[in-house]
Image 1 (spheres, rainbow, N blue to C red):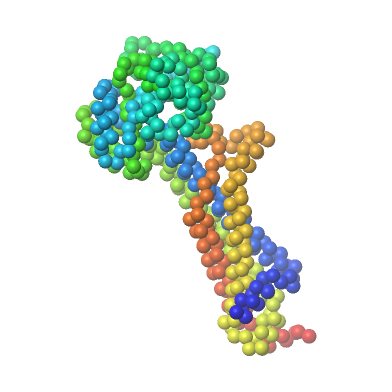
Image 2 (spheres, one colour; image 1 turned 180 degrees about the vertical axis):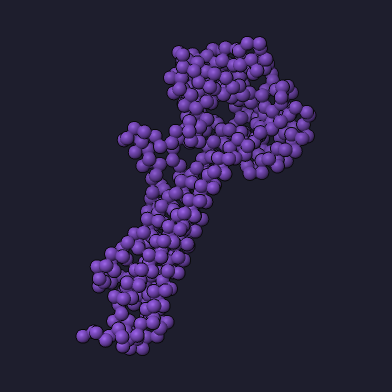
Length: 411
């Protein structure tokens, strides 16, 4: 207990030289900044990971099964797919790639014809649609209307109620020449992801009419029990279907993005953990300076009968307390930054008139953040361990102080 109380007294004492006080402040500040940055960066990386899984994959299919000549009896195929292990539900869709034109503005478009009654079981698209847009998507009779992604609408400079021409190549319709259809823009949807740049939504009947498919569909999208096991789930289903059926999964379309996020998180995390190590080992120089500054105090304690273990404990306590303060302040600052980063970035974008992330370049158009308790615990554990480890040499050196030499020049 004596070592603990003396160590606490030394930590809070202001009777240091200016150099020692300055170095001690720098050590704590370095630890606070490095811990806070690590919390912030890992939270942003977790946010990208979360948005990929919960936002992008809530719109894009987790997996889909197509046929080289479209699917005729899609209802029976859907029922068969739903019965397979690992499949939660399935829904038909019609997908048409073409061009959208409005007043000489042209942009590529991917029209997705959906049956909302089944679509809501495999995706969260209705979370991004207004009640009016949901009514449009749910009505099979309300043909001739389309909902455009916000990025696509910006490219076309088009608004709600305006007519848009959809040019579909002959490969999609089976006609000898491209098909041109006129549709009315019934709404604009903003998901904050890259799909806003080319996505258009309409009900299944409208898409079938545009693509001249009658009652056929392009494919059937699946919702599976395990996102990361999707290939294992889908492959046997395709093998059991007749010739001509193929599949695609999110791992093939977005897997590289997910892997890039995970790799960036690991590399940046490692880099910032090393920065924490550098900040923690600044405690070595701080405590060495303190031991030099407190040589006479150490010598007096030794003459009073303090053992080398107690002297060692004094400086281990002091270094550990400094590490604890720096880690706690760093975690608090990092949490504040992680919780406010999205608002701060939005404010900076509004003030300076530019965007950090564009959905036509990056997968999402905002800076996400997701705080995970395990990350906080890992950061705190590493910072405290390194801080404690950094106290060992200065504490050992303090315990080797010889009273006679330390008090030789004391008056």
